[in-house]
Every structure is written in C-alpha cells, then in structure tokens.
Image (cartoon, rainbow, N blue to C red):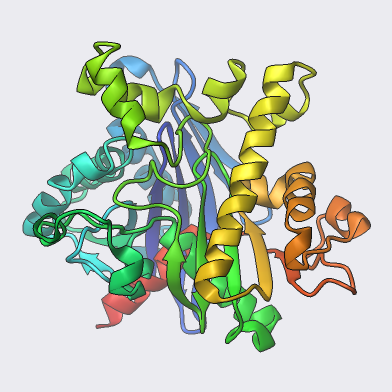
Length: 392
C-alpha cells in the first residue's frame, strides 16, 4: 500500500486540490480538482491528470462553510483510491510571519500563531486556515502540514525587507515579507531545468494573476519582491490596488469619513482592475471590451508591471531573464507583448509568433534578455514539502 498526500490550495472563493502519491521519484499526481464557491450552490469537480472528469457534486450553500465539500473529497479519495493510504494533508498558508521559513506540522500552537497573523492578510489567512479545522473535524488522525507563501522570501537582506519606519516597529514584525513564494519556488526550479545557464544570472519572475507580484532572483534565491507586509502591495491586481500613496488612506479616513473597515474593503475588494475599469477584475473581459475605462485599466496594469520589473532590475544590477507565470502571465499574450514593448530599453525583445503560440521561450534572437513562459504548480511544490516533512 502506497502513501498519498492531499494538497489544498485555498483562494478567496475557490480551493484547488490535488492528490499525490508519494513515489520514490517524487510526488506523482493521481487526481486534482476544484471546490468552487463562486456560485449559489458550491460545486466540487475532480479530474484525472489527463483532464477526464472523475466526479462532480453540488451542495446547498446554506451549510455556511465548505466543510461538507471536504467530506466529499475525502469520501471520493477513499472510494476511488482505496488501495492507497491517505497519510497527510498539505496546505498553502499565505502568511508565515517572521517565525516560519519552511513547512511545519500544524499543531494547535502553530495554528494559533498563524491565526494571529490574520490582520496581515485578512483576505487570505482565514481562508487558508478554514480547511485545517474542517479536515481535523472529519479526520483528526491525519497529519496536516503548513507550507508558506512567505517562506521563499526569508532570504531577503535586511535592506530589502525594511520599511523606513522607526526600528522598534520593525522589531515587532512590521517589515516586508513577500508572497507567492510557493509559485516562485516552483518556477525557479523549473527554470533551472530548462535553462541551467540562467541560474546564476539576474532573473525576474512575474507572477501575474488576480493576485500579482514580482520576484528578483539570483542563484535561485529571492533578493527582492514587490509585495510587502501584506498581499496589498506592489502591482495592480484584480481587485487590489497595489502600491498607493499612504496619504490617500489618511485622506479617506480624515476627509471622506471612511472607517478602517471601509478602507480595507475598498483596497482589497473594490480597487485594482475592477476599480479602474468599473467593469471587471478579469483581464479577459477587459481585453474584449471596447470601453475607454477597460483600456485604461489594462494600460495601468501593464505600466506598473513594467515599472516594477525595472525596479527589480535595479536591485539585481541588470536583467538577464524574465519569466511570465500565473493565470495572466501564462495565458494573456497581449499583456506579455505590451510589457515587453515597455521594457525594450532594457533589451527585452519578444518574438510575436512565439508569444502568440504560447511557447516556452518567447524572446527573439536579438533580445539581450531571455524571456520565458513557465506554468506554475503550487500544488506540486506543497506536495514536495509535505514529503520532506514526513520523511523527517
């Protein structure tokens, strides 16, 4: 009987999951799926690695949480993969704070510490922790492992992670942490496989999706990133503002009489592409729209991405490689092309045919910067971390 690990990757309104066999050669995917709560009746879909439908069910949203769907996932696994032993559950946890630089077993003490970090990621942290309690209620015997989006950035230097605020506040944990680390870790590893000559070079990975950030790497390690204390910082995102003059926040409270809760809701849920376009947070919808506001939202997204890639290049002292990943980075050829055009002064030259076809390498022969599209796989990264923790 072989062991398996179930990986849960919680988003704001859906949870991706994958079941991996802990094979000697590394975790091997057995099935994956989605717990989708966008709709009035939450939906569970399970597919084979080849994309074949294996199972689907819906439940009444009146249950109030997704615990009932986790029960369905576990029941399906037991029925379909009964010859395997479900040994552990791995979770993507957005914020690990200053204490967690690698994966850890989720004890009650660890859970309480992570729960206390919720103010640093109010949109994400409670959502990531919810499945931990649900699984524990159903299967208290299962080992659960936390894998952190912040861990990859623990290599940041004191200068790169510091805000220009009084030092005593930094000593209380108010500093730049960075996020999307599980994605950056996977892409850095994949890049080392397809282009090993670039490992020691100056690389920027652009994780562009509903949440978006950049990571500057050298020798496969994070040396700078665009998100800071919270996942609000940096690039323009689907509904998040990215970098903003802090005076705007003071103005909203002092002169628009907005409460802290109202400002938080504005920054997390009403800003970004949605706020600028007034139409949608989805790049596909905006690219298909002929409204001026939609075009302006896309233009701002592209401009800010190019500006901050240049900022990462300043940290690195130049740019040798640019990698696109994430939902937008992997699939929106128009966005990649527009960012490349703005970075022409840095030596970026994107091959239009390769970009349109979504090839792995999309830079032209005369480009001084090598440009790639590398699909990310956070679930596999989590499975690998779980395997390492279980071995130890």
